[in-house]
Amino acid sequence: MSTAQRAYQTKILREHVASGGAGLAGDEALMASADVHTLGAGLVALRGNVLGLFRFFEHTFLRLARRFRAEERHYPVLLPLQTLEEVGYFSHFPQQVTFGSHFPEDLPILEAVARSVAANKGRLAQEMRERVEAAHHALKPAVCLPCYGQFRGTRLPVDGAVRITMQNHVFRHEGNRYDALARLWDFQVRDIVFLGSYQEVKALREEAMDAIMALCEELDLTARLALANDPFFLGESSHKIVYQRLGEVKYELLLRIPHREMDVAAASFNLHRDFYASVYDIRQHDGAVAETACMGFGIERWVYGFLSQKGMDPTGWPEQVAAWVKSYAAGP
Image (cartoon, rainbow, N blue to C red; front, side):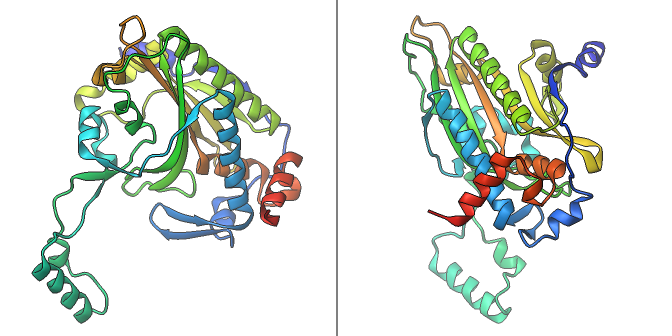
């Protein structure tokens, strides 16, 4: 298994090398700019041209979803823990989950909290924090997770794969590994999900990968589409790293960060095979178990990769990007 994994580590499906550009000299110029404000570990606010660039990519990926005729859906950022349990998230990535809870609906406790806070100049004492209820919900660690349960027990139509899309905040706890705009606790992702036969979802994934490489060429971004696996499996799930590589079920779009001589994964193209369909009994029109695929686009990472290669000055950006951001700033 180890030999097989090493053999697949360097498989590059496609690559584009930019013609040039004055990128960032370091992260300091970005994170110290007036357009970026750090609220806390992994929590970043955007404004100005950086926010405009965020909106550009947000708009671009929505257009891509519409190109696939994907139905747009919206979900809350909170998930019942049952959803994460159903898909085995805690056995794969427990370290990433951010739980959501609240104080009990108990008037004496709420009054005690209010008195304690008033006596501590607005600060919540540890003994009051311990009154918080046991969590029954978590902040969403992946955008697509709630959509599969909506198809529980359904049979897909005969006229091709089902296509849906959604954008939302994603929350992944990363310990002390938060890193500029490359790794955040709270970030946004656009997902496009396909449900159908293996042949259908695989062909749609290939079309999506072609489209994203075309975007990198259009924007003159150094990028490569590479075979990948989820970065961290625990315990009994470690064998899935090799499975993902051998099955070529996961590709990532890697944007070059020149000033750090590294890449960031800004998009992923995943074949789930029949995993989610088996959990929720989703079947094709002929009764066979369906398969699913998810294309994910991390918007902050696209902003980071773009600025790393093209710099903070819009005059050095591709014309269509600079024009779109200028129009966005001008308003309706």
